[in-house]
Each structure stands twice: as C-alpha cells, then as structure tokens.
Length: 297
Image (cartoon, rainbow, N blue to C red; front, side, top):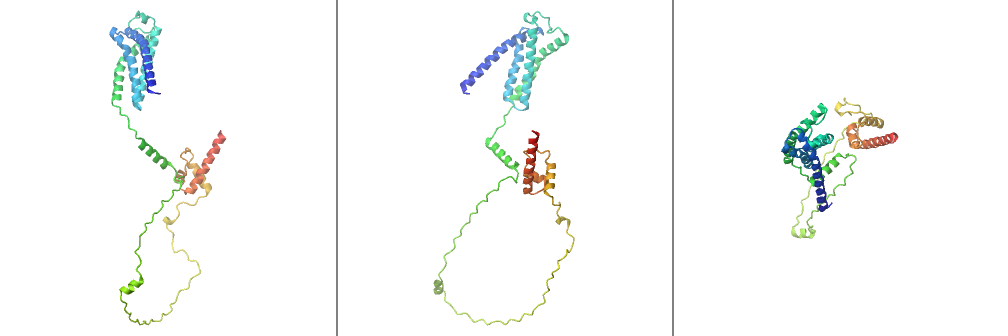
C-alpha cells in the first residue's frame, strides 16, 4: 500500500473511533452522574475510561514481550468495563433522564454494589495503569537487529546441527609447489683448465684377517607361547556386537527421539559405534517409522 492509501486508512480509523467515543461518552457520563459525580467530573469520566483504552492500544504497538502482554490485558479489561457500563445504561431508562436514585444502577443489591464498585474504581485504575504504561513506553529500547550477524549465526548453527557422517566429503586443497632455481652446471673443461691436476700417491692394500664362522641358533618351528597376562587396559572394553544387537539397542535409545534428531551422528554417539553402522541404523529406523506411520494412517 502506498503512502496516500495509508493516510486515508488512518484518517478513516480516527473518524470511526471518534464517533464511537461520542456514543460511549453519553452512556458513561450518565453512569458517572448516577454514582455521585458532579457536572465537570461526569463530563471528564468518559475520557478516563475510553482514553485509557486508546493509550493501551498505542502501547501494544510499541512494546514487546511481557510488557506488550500487560498492555493487551489493560486494553481488554477496560474495553470489557466500558461495554458493561454501556449495557447497564441501555437497560436502565431512568439513567437517561437522571431520575434514578443516587448510587442506584440495578434493582438487585449485589448487582448494584458490583456495578457501583466497577464505575468508581475505573478512574483509580486509569491513574495506576496509565502511569505504568507510559513508563514502560518511555523506557522501552528496541533490540538492534544485525542481518549479516543473524545470518552467520543461523548458518553456523545449521552446520553444527548436521551429523558428521552426513556431511559431504570435502575436496582437499591443492598443494602449490615452490620451484627452486638451481645454479647452472660448470663445464668440466673449465675445471681442468682452471685447476692444476697433481698425481695421487699409490695406496697399499691393508691385509684383512679371516672371519671365523659363528654358531647361529636354528629357528624353532613351534609357535611361541604367551609370556604373561594381557593387562586390562589393552583388552577391548566392549564385546563385538552383531547387527541385530546394535539395531535393538538403537531402537531402545531412540524410542522417544523426534524425527529431526534421528541422525547418524546422534545414533553413533548414543550407541558408540562406527559412522558406517550409524548410517545403517539411521536408515533402518527411519524406514521402520515410515512403515509404522503408513500402517497407522
């Protein structure tokens, strides 16, 4: 909706509310006269009741959370009170001509006492609730929203909630090899011409004593026995389980899990098995749940 349409809509709402207030103002003024208010107080009485309704409506548009719930309750309470007083005004014709007895809004005494208490307590409630709503609106500070940070947190949370066994295999980063330039080889002819060659002295051979043969133990063909007891730390803490045992244990552990939590990583941590077995168990449990849901339907 464009700006002109919004202005027309708000203007029409203000006109309707003003006309409704004028209708309710007549009834609330007669009720105020009946409970002992003077001319000025009876004229201002409708502003106390219906005016607080307008203030509570504005507060609900500004506040949030528990404060907004409080403003809605105030709005609903005063709307109901105004409705009751308008209803009583329509049921008692004497209120229109101011011929009703002072403090008399109903023939039945308990109902009359309740109506008088309601009519006289609304101004006091307006002072309390109106001040509280204005204080809440003035101290309200809307929380700033940073879209990039919110999207980053959501992406991080989504990745962390995924199962490790369900994540795709990442492509290894290519390794860049730094080439080192080697110096150019020096020609052999240049070395001969640059360095004078001298004859090397003759080296006489050193006599070597004959090596006596040693006795070597023959290899035994018999298997070698255990030399001691295997420590408890080196033993397997859990015997190897069959697929049926793994499936039974997974059914017991995930009986109350929701569908979103039934992942391979969650099953792997709960049952203490390998990622391959965890994926097999996840697929089997999901298939069983689907068959059970189809049978129930």
